Image (cartoon, one colour):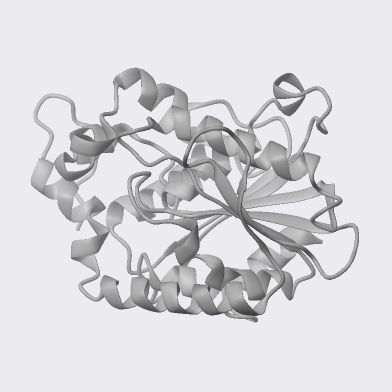
Length: 291
């Protein structure tokens, strides 16, 4: 059983406990099988579906995206943001989620970002702002509707998806719709970065500061003025991930986070498989955001 409040202790944090809570590679010994299958399926998707790969959305080396246009004009646009604790993984490993989302009638965009430690989490958040802004400006080329844009993120991507829901888009670019991100889906999202300050295997790469924790933790920020976040987590994930899934609903309220669900029998990686599985509960949650 997870020990209450251990993750937020500042005097003598239990680093071994935090490692057990946040080291998903150790928690899922066959994680390599997931990664290999995702990469193989993703390569097949890129060969079989119409797409434009490695399009620049900014000037940095990591600021590229893969775009999969919708079949019909004025369709919803889904931006899928990969996980990897902001320090690993790549968009090329996540094209496998595209077919199931396109089957819902959406255009799908999968962006990359500069990985830590070359970029901080606030820097990466701003990169995702630029990527989503690119989608808004290029909606017609995607056969999409900029007023129907949804962000889905896994793990670290869940933090980024939540942050994008609260972005002041008209301040960033007055030409964009002020409510550019209509809704978000956070899958195993990391909504409070405080525990990561004391998790050695993560902090040695992320190099978080208390200030960064404050400005980049969705649960520590005011709830967005509009939109909704659906938050889900696998029932087999650590106690900390289960806590964070509830925390964002507590912090933002049920009006903004109407669903904070645990999906039984799923771990940190198998839960993402279900997004790509039509008629699964997670796929249905995504479909509901696109209506």
